[in-house]
Length: 182
Image 1 (tube, rainbow, N blue to C red):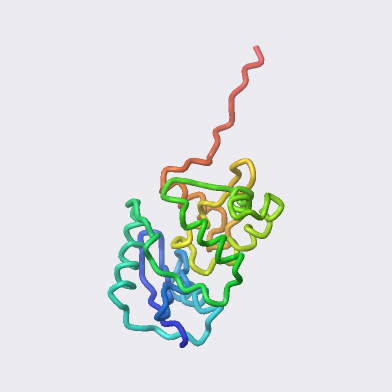
Image 2: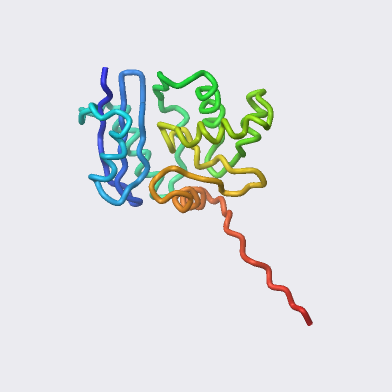
């Protein structure tokens, strides 16, 4: 079955959500326009069509809107359909869903948590870049070594990641220290 999707506006821009009978299969973080969001959402599933929202999908969309208004939202209960993902990526996504609002982890820490060792941090980074259900699987909460921001493949790139983290109360902006020479 091809997924169905809905586009909707949030305070951060237009988002898109695609679903199957098994859960959310794709989420598109905010874009500047409805057309851009639809194009990005359909990039991996060009044949999907708009669909009638189930009560669960409508509830998820409302939760996304509240998230971008700054309300603490837990997406842990939202079913996701990760069919087509390999088992290691599914394990990464499952572990990442345990990282709650305002918390962060690192690529290396996730790799170690899964018993893969810190050398698999690069694989975790690849999984983050390919996350089909961003926000619901909170890849924005996964940082590079040393708590550095790292990359982000959503519209707006790392700036979007930084804004999402700040929305959750995580501040990664460091003010330069002033040194007095005299």
